[in-house]
Image (cartoon, rainbow, N blue to C red):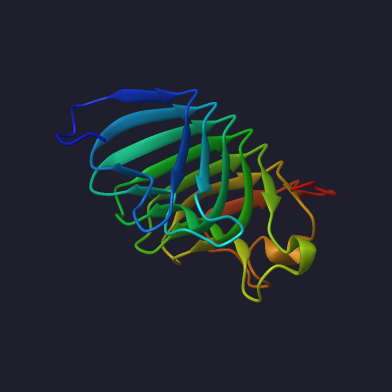
Amino acid sequence: LGGASGRVGTLSGVRIEHFYETAVTILGGPWEIGRCEIVSSRAPNRACVGVVLRNVSSVRLYDCTISGCSAAVLISSAQARVTARETAFSNVRAAIEAVRGGHIDVQHCRFGVGLNGGAHGDVGVRIAADTLGTVSWNNVPNEEYLFGGFAPPARVEVMNNLPAIIEE
């Protein structure tokens, strides 16, 4: 999706099944993905990345379900930004992964990592030290799984994440 940084778009109400290819690649501009399901076509086996952000891009996820991926959302640019609300992540190695910084704003989401004997090393958020943002008011079955037992980066505000039983 995208291209030139001036492009905008919305993806709404669809189910995307993928395995060997990334389900959604955002190359530039602001995008919204709402009320969508992004799942592995070979569940319970994990597919590759669900949503990847490149270049100067942003995505607002709302009321989505992303499951069965190596990473649900991968930020691969320091200029990229993800905002997630009311989105459920399950059976993922990392729900949000930022390899080169960027900005995250993840609130009121459900992290199903660590459930049903999830794979060792599965985390809610795996981000670089120069990532900015907030991770607040999310449901996670065990706070240990949110950052994999590590402290979050100094410029990421973490508060009021609630332990909860989450059904997959």
